[in-house]
Length: 161
Image 1 (tube, helix red, strand yellow):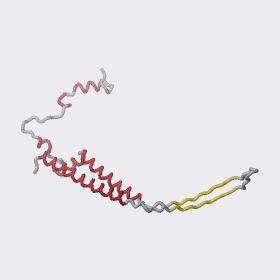
Image 2 (spheres, helix red, strand yellow):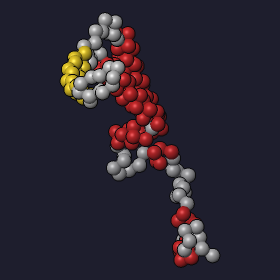
Image 3 (spheres, one colour):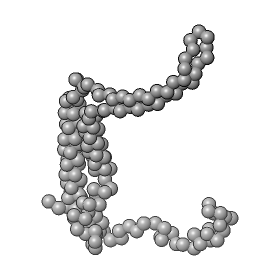
Image 4 (cartoon, rainbow, N blue to C red):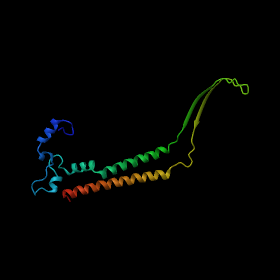
């Protein structure tokens, strides 16, 4: 009978693999401790490297970093909205001759130019800018607190004081 991938040969190969090879290895001696599993030897042995791995994989740190990035981009948007928006316009129009008895008109070519300068009396956005700066500061503190909490959890798991 074929397996889920549709090949009888693949199903036969899976039947020949021992069950122990498919399951993760568990500690066999009672001397193995949580610290031995969390503090491996080799390139991952350095606590600094473990903290880098934690920073890459912890959801709370990722959320704090994204929140910090979002608040910085929001502040940039608030600053950009304060810029003056000058407008320049150039236009060309052509009207054909109108042969109406009531209102006849000759053919007409028109060229127009325009400049618009908005007068922003009340659009200084002081409150909105202050709120965006406070949001950036809050996100920085939240990110720092999340990093400290991750370091404390890692030190507690490793038994480091």
